[in-house]
Length: 304
Ligand code: OGA
Ligand code: MN
Image 1 (tube, rainbow, N blue to C red):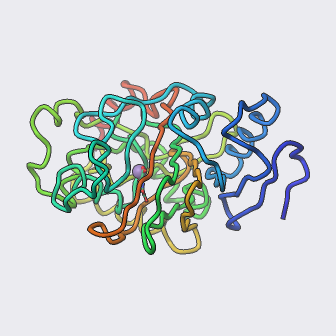
Image 2 (image 1 turned 135 degrees about the vertical axis):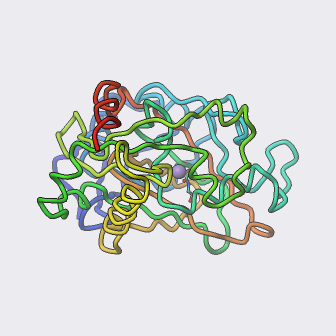
């Protein structure tokens, strides 16, 4: 069903709760402001957008992503480190060969199969991610998205009251250790991503919609015994990712998918890493503010 309030784009819902496909727009050409404004509105409304058939190159993907704000620079150890585009890929950009399955550049990507939001391990976490399919595997490699607004709306009132003031600690080293070895990150890499506080509930300042803010990076609740916080985070994650809150995207080459990291979680799925090429390129739009002030984080840490 197309939504009549849009003049420059065609919007088709992909799921009853969130996610929409956008067509009728060519992102490889300069995008006029009225069309961009409608895309931005659709993004705030639907939280995840799929643009099929966009044959973007790096420059084109960067140009579109920059319309939404400043881009994040990648940390050390990632494919594309120190640049603005992340390779979510099993292909070595230097040699164009498939990367061995035990190469650290591939190992760190296995954690993408855990439910997460991008960069929640940074003090100012990412607002949006834009992932472009350059090469897709024959089977597998789908990406699932969970609607964290629906998850918030469906929480019982007492749970909402409990969560509203809580702060979770998010730690990149914690989430990596869930799928790879504890000592996977070098001390220098660890020092680059110290644990940070994040609100457990966030609101989109553009429309007031609240969402649970969870990720595999969330290790515990500040001010709570670890086991109790872990139990709450596990309970909320199970609730937030129940099947009716999830849209699974099956990629076609040249799809661009853009998601709101503060209104969704996502996770990748396995494919034949040794045989099938999968080359995805991600630009990440930085958030404009932290989800919790330093004062509120300190207050949460001191409470018990
Ligand atoms: C990402 C991510 C999952 C996938 O790009 O941030 O988590 O399926 N991707 O590639
Ligand atoms: Mn991700």
